[in-house]
Image (tube, rainbow over all chains, first blue to last red; front, side, top):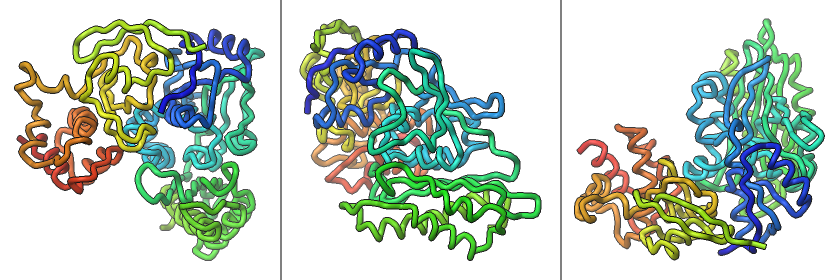
Length: 291
Length: 157
């Protein structure tokens, strides 16, 4: 399988990359890890005139806490996230997520920014970033802007990124004390996209009630889904089983999955419910609450 | 469109300079341009893992990369594992032979290239770690059991 011909550019600075994108407009596409883009080019689902490889631009691979945010460079590899001491010790929800993306070989090349910028509702980071209340930092010819992740996904493979912009960083507010999160994915086999997936992030109050909850769903509709009703329902409630089950039902109601070889729509919605409840329980446990 | 680009890569310690079309896959570059056919091509869309090579020490699927992306890089293919004119097998290759970790052998180059860096990072791995490590490589003959045994044998010779 050979992609259609294209011109290749390997800029060594962000400003050069942006100039190329601005010059070629819709005819150009950013290449990061290429783990989604290459298969699409090969089966000719995508065709580009100009490929702008950002893999040689220094300074886009990091994970650090700074100014109240966990900042992840867009070109950070999933494998690097898995190895990061900061992620392993403080952000198990991100470790959960990275560890179930495709397979180890893909994770050596795949980038966190690419996982989001691809705009695929079947990708795993979007749900987690929705639960965490993350923003993406985007650089364009007119400078930098931050887009909350819940406003980033516009449709199937469509995001708020303009054709002359590059996603450069993911910013996650450092969770307060007594917070925890988890991501769970149901997949038929390693490397498959999710039949269903749920991310949950909770912060517990002093009395043990849920102060704040974030819930994101994978592959449950044309875009990644933030289960807003379920999040609102949980605020201020004690995390007993009945409450979590109701949150699961509300989250499933936000899902509108399509039937395919992974299952019927009803089955996927039910799995979204079950995984939401389990992810909430794991998140609460990690926040130091009752298990 | 698609004008050729000069690249230089070091493969198994030998430096090669070529001019390539941007759409040329690294796997095809290795097999056709450099005649290194030990790297196999199977599914061609990032599932089977038979095309795995090391790029700057990390296991990557060479069918999911363009050769131009590897410009300036250091590549190790299965041909580079054995030493002494190919007679002196790599310990992992010996373990594969001794533990019957292959039947048809089509997946073997990819498995070896996936597992060489894995063993470097996990000198004493357990079964679940080994199975996770080879989860991106398909084998249709062995049922994987003897591959797991070979990895353990190579780790504890």
